Figure (tube, rainbow, N blue to C red):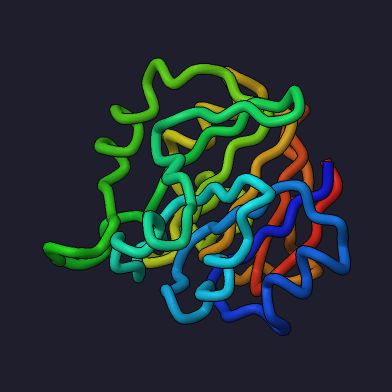
Length: 186
């Protein structure tokens, strides 16, 4: 299955063009985007659109674009089960930002069922994160989820690993870092 995933930056081209040219079968938003970056998704109605909000998202634009919010939910498509977790580590006080403490995230993920593909805005703790900083630290709960449930794929944005330190596999899970727009074959 070919998916188009996007995170943190506007796409390089119109999403409708990327979807058509690459025979995309599912669209996936990993957060820190806005309605205007994704606006042309309104005209895309023939493929599923799923996503999670990032810590800089308004948390209000998915419905108008036909994107299913996968935060702590699951969705099945073409034999694969997708699930998601929104936001980032809580590094400041905000009534609107999607942020959680390590304890809150771990508690929310307890009992979350197995999925083939976990999508998240933030990475797991110690994997493609900046674990010594507050804003770009990954979630311990997501790392524990991978260790326990062993999804086939884990997609995330939010951070800025370099080619020299990027982690592409943890245990049996393929880790896919997304920045801007990326076509992924699952």
